[in-house]
Image (cartoon, rainbow, N blue to C red; front, side, top):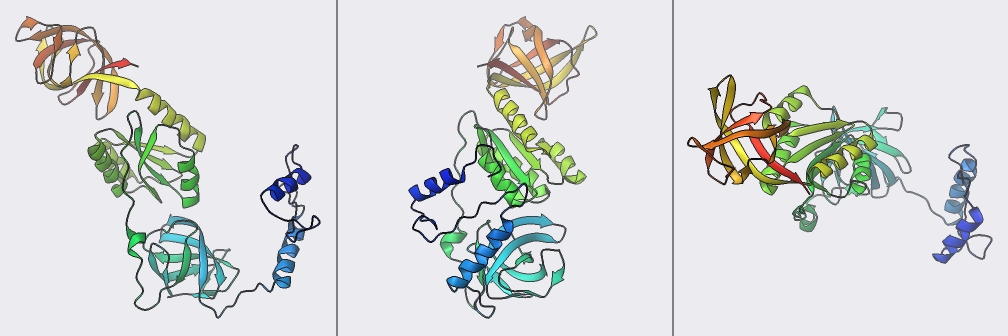
Length: 356
């Protein structure tokens, strides 16, 4: 109702088309307009919730079996934190809990003011410390009964889908699960998420990105949104050749991914590795071995080191066993003089690319 174009009457008509019978129109479902800007209608809404609960005999029982629902998850210094609403029963410290996918032993309970408490009753929010891993938002939570185990089907991971041609490979970490869900739902087309998770970026995330590169034979990007990146992890990513990108603004993240996707549309014609360096007339000759495709004189070349571009180059001279050549294929070794003479090293890669 805060939008200039908002119409309560129009909304009522749309709800009725969906089969919802409203009060004042022959039904028994109340409707209360609420303004997020002014707070108008909030008190009316609270009174209406209480009235409907009273009329319909809806009430919780603190002594009943525990019934709660996960509304948010995050990772803090103490470990995984799960925010939930207790709908029925009572949640106490040291309780054994279970969701559809994970179990937990409650090590700490915190109310809406972050105050430590020993128990939480129905209708109250709580943050729970004690889960070994984060359950999905929306999960049901109940007390773990003696001998109860998780259903096998729930513990089985879904099979991975292969990324399509042209898709970039990403590993994503966010501060909390709500943000992660929103991010995953709005990623640019052409993004393939190999792994995603909540909390600070860890060494295991770097290794997950490396494993994804090996599994799918393509470059992986480790993306952190509002998550902390320890210096040791950043150093490991650099050592492993993993591109680590950190963002605090979601639109900047999307823009960066779109640029990467566009850049990946460049078709690689060939790859060669620099295996030796020879001095020649105040210049350097790069001794190269073609790994795949072909390298040809006149190609547009890019000098790469640890998956990072050092700049564009052209072939000034190209020889194989002292004979001038114009092209070399897989397995062939050659000597090349580049222009400009970038500071190349043994192990650097040369890519022959052309835009699609």
